[in-house]
Image (cartoon, rainbow, N blue to C red; front, side, top):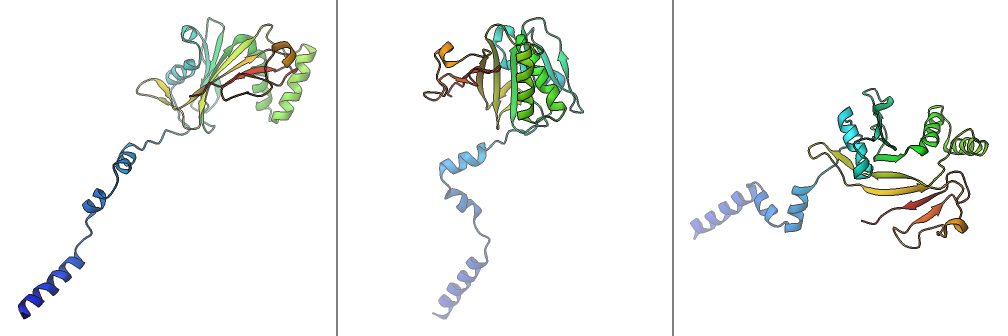
Length: 220
């Protein structure tokens, strides 16, 4: 009897000193938890790409048939805004700025370049958004800053978690938006709502102003 009691006490002590069974703990996890742990992926932030990679990423915002001949702007190793490739068609693309959070590449019709370029100049001068808009509006009205004479589209691929997949050459995790500029367009001119009726529906932003445009954000 004494031997049995001794063995029982000994087994209890040995069990209490043993290391916890991590294998047992992992078995208790649900299948969903295991999948989530093994599949967690964190996209690169403020991704710094080579010139060729910037070009490859930027042109993906343009229509497929216009990508290879589009002009491309991007950034040097020191962060300077610069032309990466000359173009021979009507599209201008801009690579993602690694100094800004999130991800955004754009391509737009060249008739929008005077307005876009002026905005960049004023931004470099340290003008606020309100100041930039006021200056461009006055310059558009006076004719100093040229505006498109026909509807002109800007294509955007963007997203906080978006990035350029260097292995596949594809922009990942983002979504598109299309901005069709029609200077001084109004609701009466276009028949568009001034706010989307439903998610992804087109609507007119800044009606009657120099930068009036149709916003289209497809739902994914």
